[in-house]
Length: 161
Image (tube, rainbow, N blue to C red):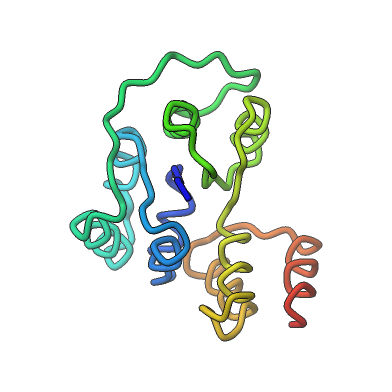
């Protein structure tokens, strides 16, 4: 399955020490150079090291394919726009993106979208994570990731937690 990612899913999973979940699910994940530059600014030292290791291992790959300029219905930051453009160019099966506006724009142009919460849920459902609730707590506390209470309850109900 061909996956392209924006900054947030990679940086947050790297902070949690769960970046390997993407490798196990997708084999290889592509990022545009803009996302790579954003990841390089990550202030979490361990997360930054994990990203560098994933890139050195070759499964997190910067893709320099030239993309066409995009006209999106929603103004997005450079990383989101570049990730959407790369996903379109590569005909990706999935775009990993957490930002609501970016997800809406990606769906508008016909892309399938997944985010960190879905990735953690998938990992729990397939046995790669023993429990989901502690990961969501760590995501909030360590990565400062906002999780809507209603969405959290729904996700946890899917795995009986």
